[in-house]
Image (cartoon, rainbow, N blue to C red; front, side):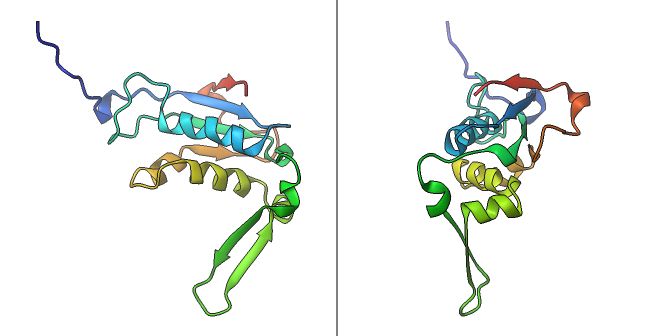
Length: 144
């Protein structure tokens, strides 16, 4: 009896909606779980070259934490491309400015840097508080 390997096609992907509450959670630990949901690692039909991941809604991003003294030491770096255009902002300053970017950056850095990364990040929705717009999709709650 010969067995054939079945490769998942784009048309056969079944995407679920998940909601993750990061209130009081460590940033890195929650970002790994969110990234694995976006990639679709828990699914048996995962294929490396097809985006098989799910939709993820993250709520309460204002209440995410870092371990130990990292809140004052962690920095976000960006550069404008011009001489002297380096911009450095700490985690605490970024949380005051916009806490959703903290979670998006953490998840972005945990997803492999390939052509599928941008598509996977479009299925990530981050909200500062417990109110979110996707109630019609009936998301499944994930406990971290």
